[in-house]
Length: 121
Image (cartoon, rainbow, N blue to C red; front, side, top):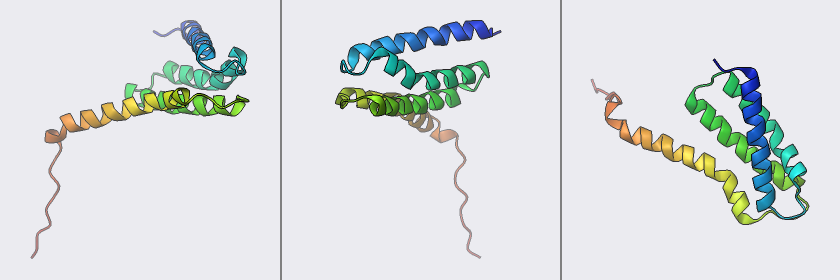
């Protein structure tokens, strides 16, 4: 059973770790507090969906979308332009999930039913 206090502790630690790592990667004008404010709502929403036991695929897609939104929020709160690699880093989870979904569809293509044919009569 997932205890709410365990989930809060886990996501708070991940939130703090992400804020500190992104602080090291971003320009000095963007502080850890500004980053924490930008990624905080996404962390809370992710924790709620984790607590509600969303299916893995839905959780992964939601996480990728929230990560991209957080990246955009950091760009808005920053006074200087973010490095290009950090902007590209926002698209990485969505890209990876898209690759996995297409790979699974490719692997299971033989299990799909063939399209019905139109009979002329």
